[in-house]
Image (cartoon, rainbow, N blue to C red; front, side, top):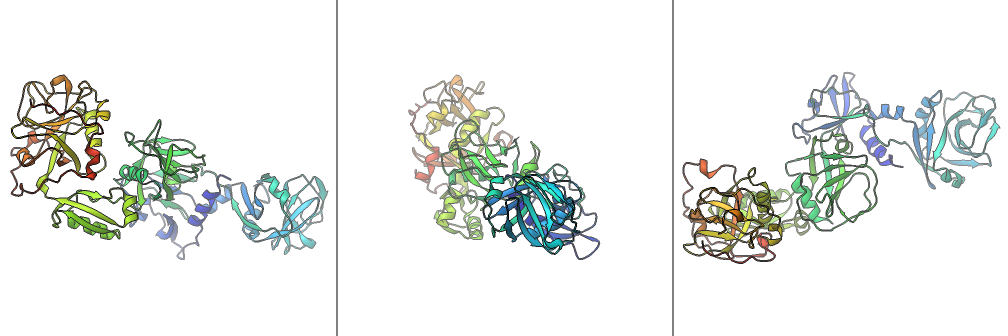
Length: 571
């Protein structure tokens, strides 16, 4: 029964008593009722609600009105469920007035011709007229021609009889007829509920127009909350990075799911998977579309290519109503735990606000900048309850200005290699340096470097501060370098022009970075949007240049090549 979960959720959202004051409207906002004045607009109900300006919201019509217009109702019994389709006509409103009273009633008796469920009181007038019935017809009946003992009857065979009501048929069993056949006397009706498979456009809509007027009994969803699944820590972190700005864009929509494909060039592993039920959120970890995030609308079978990320807890309608290209506000639970880039003091306050403990390492002063944290994955942090935060001085974090428009593929390589694609401060490991060398090189990744097609290189002169990467045309593909002395012949990694992609400019103090630097050291970097060529004065050398450079450690694995390239010779 595809719409059952939809109805259960909506019933909780929308059934509320009318407001006490006649000029007030009762509006449901993210599952909680509030009262607003007549003529209220969307903007009037947003105070205190999670909402990023410009994103879409969902408006759903009063559930009472939606139920009036549905024609299918599910009977949930101790033997299973069956569906009754209610006919339009004289009995439709009577049915709507009475169906909730069937809950808890039982099959009072069975004969070869009928099942009788009840009894309950009604205002149905009595009659001794005969009526014809076809197998699976549903009709009203009065015990002893008394409306205080009203029954719902289901015809088990074609027949003609008088059951106390004139022309009593109001519907038919259309699905689950085997359940009706299996019913026994005393079996209870646990629930009767409308079957709402999908809201129609006139029942629900998505809009980002905050001047949209609201009506009595409407419901508003301002955001989508996803409760995360700890069994897929890598997939969850991928999701958290994708929604780090507090929104998610809808890039694909089908009858089965809504999806986001904004973060596809990633490497993931197989984790937890199960049947993809409505409201489940998954990420594809292999095959075509790897990295795509899915919000399921209908049930789909298990796929080993999909890791479970979590489940939609709020915003069930909103996520599927948003048009392709639109964005929604999204709130993951728990939120991402990422303190890299904060000071040690800021990191402590943030972690304590999440009920987590901080263990300071490296430079532990309040003003020290956190450049590494362990664990780095949010689900692992929540499991352990504490985070090791490695701090350093700000002069040990170096700004790189990246040529995103000129060399997009090479910049993407740098992001993945350094970790800048998922954290504000990345790392590279020194591959080769010595005093007086005209460049410094950093480990690359031979496998990722195999796809580094040639991109723009230098023209007449490779300048001091140029950052480059060796492209796929050379044996040391993927090697990263910074030019320390200008050269008309060789680039930042010691290669000639055809073997070098220039990916940016070093925007900090090169002398400061080079003090005491040796092979295997970890260098911290962050991206700046200010080109050093537009800065009149270079950054001065800091008095703390004698602070130790952190030696190689496990947390720098992402900046290390799986197959170490040969060291470049001095050029």
